[in-house]
Length: 505
Image (tube, rainbow, N blue to C red; front, side, top):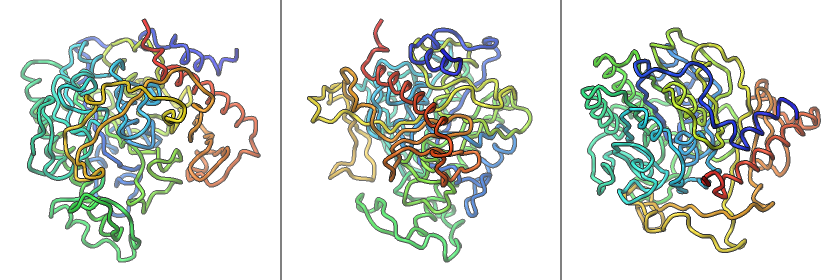
């Protein structure tokens, strides 16, 4: 067996996940407070620090200038629910059937909030959940996944969001949505501080997901976008009817940019509050997006593709970490990193062993310390798909009644303002299960198979060609063959997990 295949084999068997992470484990008084922040549909280029020509994101810019800026940070999937699952579990979402938006997580998954809560952390979730209903009876609500308190929504939300507190009936919260959920998180943090406990807080914004809306002052910042900017019609949801509408992209982007600016300001309020409470020094703030820019907002994306694609435009997202106690000097990293890395990283920081099952992320603690200059293992992407009903009856993994959502949103599904969730048992493995757009990314090369608009194999040197214009498959057939073998072996591991094998005693 070659050494380069050894990590993959350990991953596939689960043996690589049975021991604590390398390095000294944290002692209780060394453990940081942790806040994870995530924008909804916030693409890589939509920050000032990444050179956007119009957007104003002064707080994220400050974080990038003072902390660790992850220039090659990836969402585990090009759509939201799957990526969120990767944050919670450290595992690719296809392992537990969270294939696409509206597909729930499975109750047997081990989540980072469960791990940190057992380690003594107070745990709270605020904002978008989208891994199952947030109602009290759901076996996949934030409480079931380890959060002591939650003020959350099944899906996305706009101004004056309807949110469920600890699984109760949804209640309208007046105000700008990012400000609302940050205020709830601050309330939780203040209570935890009085109790003397470290905290783990997840703030998942509803912004900047469409349909767009903003406060007057934020909209005014973008009244003078160039006349030739966004001069095309785009399709999105109407705030008035909840149904699709065609609008001028320039007007749409004005509202989207206002939402991003409001989200940025809310992060600033949180940072200021932590500083005022003497908590900022040893609090790790980690911001990222959940997937690339969506089609209606794609105006300045420098990469190929957009939300839903496994090209860079669908997967590259903003990634910034601020932790003054441990990251005292500003740094920019071009190491490939991914949302699946969050759980292993936090486990090491909290001194907790990893779950005894296959993981797809790695700890980035060495990256914080400047001891990692390249990723030791590839990152895998896969727009997997559920087995069709034509292949046989599909057995729901969770009682469909428990999968019914309660928190309304503007965008209607038929005539319904709430969303229900799906997940199915997956008996056995069939050859057709390996289908779907997929990719493997090593330090330099990215192999894409059956990408959107392509029915074959594409190989890109993403270091030299981040826009993925030049297919090098003919020039480097040996690289493509090696990566394809690794990708297929990884898929076998994922499909084994999908059958439920990881949950066996």
